[in-house]
Image (tube, rainbow, N blue to C red; front, side, top):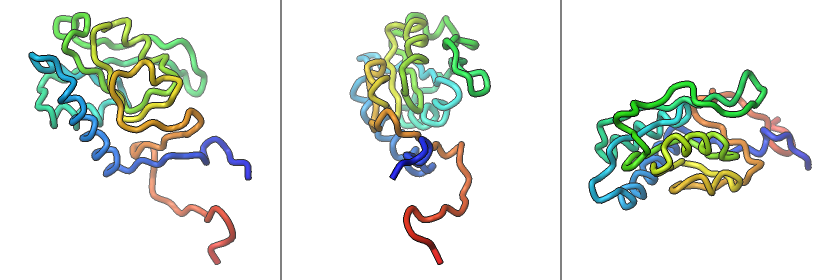
Length: 166
């Protein structure tokens, strides 16, 4: 049976995202430099929720954001940084933890890594094509899987896959 791209979905609830972000924090605790993490930089917007959870779990009080734009409505373009973190804090990325929800193709992270080449990049979820751009992640999904994050969803009725619900 053929499916539409959005039907090969991986639905992530708030509870699941919280559990997965905490698991990533545990992993990152062991990857910390001897002096500890200096700051967390969330890639907006998807990285903000996991960055908040990870910064809380690891007791990192300095949190900033980097905004990368690669879509104009539904047309993809070359990613570019439209908001940078505080340069006096992040420098070349030494001791900095960059957090995003997902790495898909890796194009966004390529731009971020150029800005902070010594940073540790971590995502909650990773697809094979973008995986080389990530230092740490929790769950890998196939390249053709669409991840539905909790901030993109609302609860509603769904028809059964086969048969009817009569």
